[in-house]
Amino acid sequence: MGNCSERSRTQSLSTRRGRVVTRIRDKIAASKRKGLWVGGMVPLGYKVKNGKVVMIKNEAERVQAIFRRYLEIGSLNLLMQDLRQRKIFTKIRPLSTGRTNGGIPFTTWPPPSKPLLHWRSGLQR
Image 1 (cartoon, helix red, strand yellow):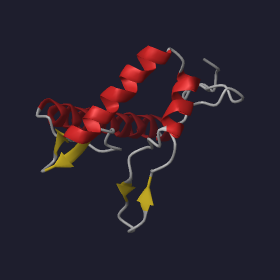
Image 2: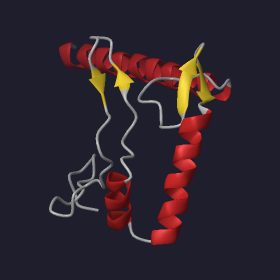
Image 3: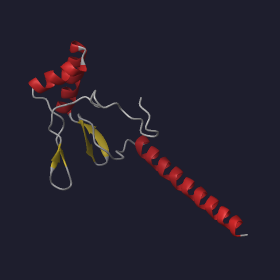
């Protein structure tokens, strides 16, 4: 009798957890459909205003210039060198602690000496 009740309780908890995950996933999807920002770092060229992502014209022009330059050069490493010479750096983001993040040279990731590991299984891609 003890094993049976333990199994049914475990199944009940698993079902409830599944419903919560589904509800959260649906909420996030609905927010995205409405165009609301659901969190994370805002890409260069954009900012969050009243919960929505808004384009910043001068940053967007910088992003377009970076992509145009990449098409001209054809090499990511040479592009990184070119951006450093032209003093084009990552976006400076203020943190809630009062400190800032960013304002550093662009880099390629992952560095060639460290292969990318698959997030789930640890297998190299």
